[in-house]
Image (cartoon, rainbow, N blue to C red):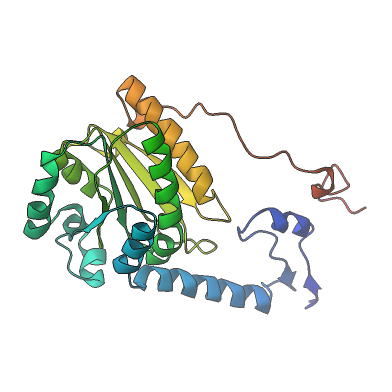
Length: 267
């Protein structure tokens, strides 16, 4: 039995993706390098879940951009509780509910929320750039926004309770997605039209994989802006709202393709 290292014939496609493709083999097994890379990626994903969230640092970034913030708390008091009890991350605690009451006196169109979710790494790296760009787009539309809400240990559905308390037309929530082996810092953006406690996942839309190696924050903000405008026009969100935007990915250059029409064929 051979133990020679055999590269995958489609190795040239790895430059297009962070996905674990074209791993090759050593004899009948995976290569040691591949196994070590897998273990490293798995460790990074676990670290992203357990990483601490620093809302104060985000608040300072937003202050520099002229955006007011308010920090709230859920009924999940720590990371371990948050992971074991998803229901507690869907509800504000009494102090947070009280903190929101003064905002009701000044109606606004949108409540923008940021949480660590399942990857504080994603929130720390991508949330500020995405939120600042989206804030700029929405203010250009002359939409009004409440102070940006920073909420550690929150689940997606928390936006429904917040939206119902504030009486806003839309809630937009940015939070860290469950880390993948190649994407420990991927941010997700969820929005709901007319948020209320009775809303389900079918009532909201998601723009995912927000990160430099996926959908860059500025592009994500542009997509969210257009989707929110369409949601407002039609007075809907969720499965009824379709993304009809054209594909804006740049056309690949001629030299980005392998010379052969069949990438499995040797030249």
